[in-house]
Length: 138
Image (cartoon, rainbow, N blue to C red):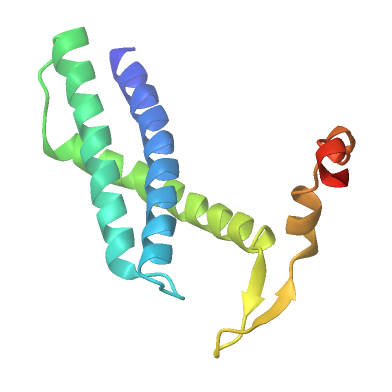
């Protein structure tokens, strides 16, 4: 029972870590103006997720349950858990990113198409259309 609870907590930590590291990876790619995925970012993300989940597993085993913590078997099991979750999270994040992209650009930097879904998503509520209209008349 303790082992199952330990791996459930590790799974929750893995899912949260995947989301956070993919958000950071996306922002780093924007910062460095990369057009394609960068492999070192993926490798670093998987290593970070492995470290966080391994630490959660160690804390659950040693401090909560008082069990002996082994090194190799949990490492292999966590890697088997991390890789599919990271791949699925990456594809879901890429799909979300492409659907709600503001615009597409050409090689020379010109805007090709404004995304209609993004424009529809950012509309103001009807109450705010005439907000501060009195100051505009002056």
